[in-house]
Amino acid sequence: MTRIGILIGSTRPGRRGDQVARWVHERATRRGDAEFEVIDLLDHPLPHLDEPLPALTGRYQHGHTQAWADTISGFDGFVMVTPEYNASIPGVLKNAIDYLHAEWTHKAVGMVSYGARGGTHAARQLRALCELLQMAAVTPQLALSLHTDFEAHSVLKPGAHHIGALDTLLDEVVARSVAARTTPPAPRETDEAAIRRRIDGITDAIRAKDLEGLRRLYATDVVSFDIDPPLQHLGVDAKLKNWANVFTIFQEVTYEVRDLMPTVGEDLAFAHGFGRLSGTLPDGTAGGGMWVRATFCFRKIDGEWLIAHDQVSVPLDIRDGKGVVDLEP
Image (tube, one colour):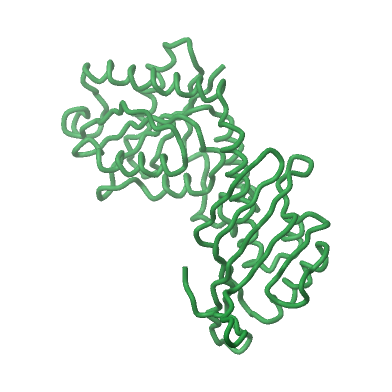
């Protein structure tokens, strides 16, 4: 059956979110079209985001992250209950959301906010964040006022008119969640996201000087037209030798990609954009690097997109035969 998580977005002592979540849960459990469960961030004590790699990679190093990912991945949709602190959502809620990516993507979400003015500023920010994660944020939302829906500003006593609004919100969340389960994202969209994750994996592994992490991104027979000689580098070991040389040059190294444009086929794909390698030299000098043109060609091997060919180049001044290295995208 479809599972909907009711997420309490505050851990603050004296919070009202637990009352709101229980009220939502009590109403929701009268339905027969989904299972509802309260998710309390107090039960998931996540430190300030401490994962070294972006959540987009899906590679988690800490047990608390994996436990959180396992919890969220088990739900098909969410109702997020948030207060409004200084016209924004609580930091603990933003932190919990930032830990993950794929576990949120394409899932339905509805917002129930509360505050002096109904928490509408917080709900607006939360909606924008969820939509950025490609969640299906439903249009109906519920705003509870501390002045009119809480007795003495502390005990939840929602007005009767909120019942119909809550039912409508739940209708939409359940319907969107069911639709997402029965109609998965189009394969082309999924593959494009996988290609982008692969490129993100390159930048993350370079920053971490992780040669084994890089090895997992290339086909064993990769052909690389790299920026340094010779004309071509054959095989993954030759490619990794280039990166190993880079890691000896820089004490700290950064790689960034701009304007990436992927094109995805059945089992072949390519992406082009601009890349820049920079970092800090062993003597502490900052190396700003240069922008280059980069093309990545992928093959789908055993269900995974791997780089089978890459090419890096700079424009050439034909008159003197020198590369032009001071251009920016």
